[in-house]
Amino acid sequence: MRTARHIRHPERHRSERIGWLRAAVLGANDGIVSTASLVLGVAAAGAGHQTILLTSISGLIAGAMSMAAGEFVSVHSQEDTEKADLAKEGAELKQVPAGERRELAGIYVSRGLEPALADQVAARLMAHDALGAHARDELGLSSTTAARPLQAAWASAASFAVGAALPILVVATVAPAQLILWVSVSSLTFLSGLGALSAQAGGAGVWAGAARVTFWGAFAMAVTAGAGALFGAVA
Image 1 (cartoon, rainbow, N blue to C red):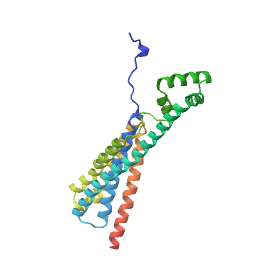
Image 2 (tube, one colour):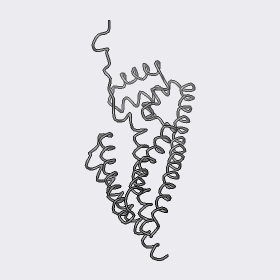
Image 3 (tube, rainbow, N blue to C red):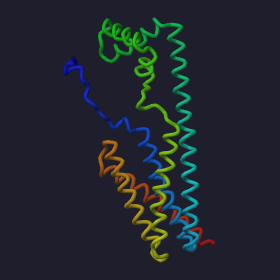
């Protein structure tokens, strides 16, 4: 019969979401900002409503594909590095197991354990799972933070598409004369909500997260709109 102290209660930590959350937030934020900025820049340059709509849809497709490819390549590079480190560590464990145990014990001593206890802990953990112990405590690798290229790619592409669809929906529904105003206001509202949501999911301050995302989104849209107006006037 299992006693109460042997029963593990389930815990879920926010760090478990870090892989997909980072990619999803980055994708959605980029989708809103880049598409809204594209719309405002083209609109400020004097383009027609149909041109603006087609340009924004093209931006959604190109951006989603770019996000997927970029995330996959970058995260795959991280995964390759992690695998190389694990392979190197595995080889060292076979060649100099005693030295690797002393290295692991030294890590535990630096964290506050007495040398004798640290050596016992290192020996016990290496007997159970030597590579896992070194991956976790020497390399800082775990299943929570492990690189997942496909997950990151899909999360980025899908979230970018969702984010980009929001200003495109505004473009498709509002009158051309009010397009710049409505795209600006709605996109900043979307960004504020995204910032608050991602901050809450990550355990950070909601107001600070919303303000940070909104500020930089407004800055990007203002710069793009200014450039569009300038080049439109020159043309």
